[in-house]
Image (cartoon, rainbow, N blue to C red; front, side, top):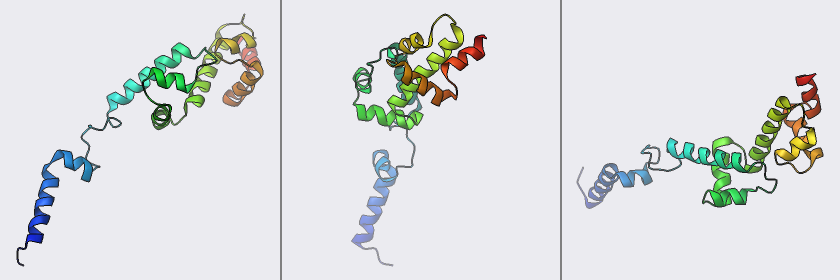
Length: 152
C-alpha cells in the first residue's frame, strides 16, 4: 500500500480528533467530561433547589405563573419548562397544582377548624369547586371525605 497525501490527511484528522478534548466533545458526544451543564449533577440539584424554594415561597399566590418564576430564575419560560420536564417529567402548571394539592391535603389532615374553602384559598386556588375536583382527581377522594376519615 502506498502512502498518499489522502492517507496522510486522513491520519492527521484522526489524530487531531483523538488527541484534542475540545474536538472530542463535538465528534464523540458520548464521552462524558461533565462540561455540559445539563449533565452536571450539581447543576441539576441547584436548579431544583432554587425552583422548589421559589415554589414554596409563592405557591399561595393564585396569580403565580411560570413567567414570574422564569424571571426569578433568570431564564426563559421555554428553558424553565424544558429543564423542569426533563427533571420531574411534569410541566410547571402540573407541578404547582400537585404541590398546592399536597399542601392542602396536609392542612386538611392537620387542622379541623378550617373549612375546605378556606384551605383552598390558603394554598392558592381561587375557586373552591375547582379545588375539590382537582383534589378528587389527585387523591381519589374529596377533601371532605378525607377530613371525615381523619378526624371522625
